[in-house]
Image 1 (cartoon, helix red, strand yellow):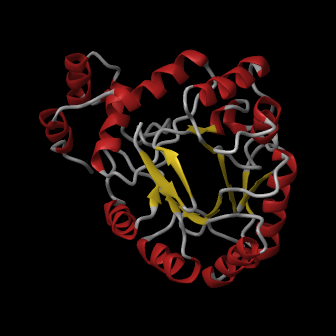
Image 2 (cartoon, one colour):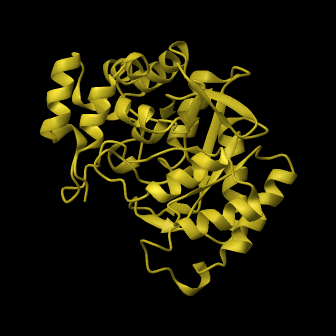
Length: 291
């Protein structure tokens, strides 16, 4: 596996995202608790040293599963979380953008995971997709200032930002010396290329979410595209593997965090690291017209 720096640590480029471990809608207990634990342990056996989670996955569920499966943690394991959101009693997503809420969320992550420091924590912005109430309309400088304070206190080793515009990323680079960005990006959705290139030129890890499209009906799925399917058949791989392998080939600062709650799907995802697409394959995929 190739590696790339994630702040002060260097991780393999295929990690694991814990978002699919809780129940439907990322809410409530795992469908199969035993298998969720087994997936986490097998992921580490296969070389995963970067796990992405959040206190609001469940809530609490992903973090508690990670602790049950892997604590005491291997020295090389980078645990990365995100703050800026919360859940209501029905599982709805609520903004939690105030500095004191960011701090409380970091503390909650440390407690449930049973660790003294997180490798990185992403500030998950919500101003671009929700009409925030007045008390949640916080200047980015104030939010980043709190994240930097948490880093200086040793609770987090690195600051990241998620769902951010280029201007917001530039501000985060300047003010907080961020180590990673989590934005939507895939073979079929390259609207964030300017941010990806900024991260590449700055040596910052870029961690795409929705790397294969998403479950939302109005968004195209990479695995359904005929060119992806043709390449997959040619290289004897699944369309999902081809879509992920293209991302690894597209920029060397991309870190993948594909998630799953099944062992079979985990094995498929991890095999992406060994899938070598030819220059012609990559060129054919890259030439796909995107929206």
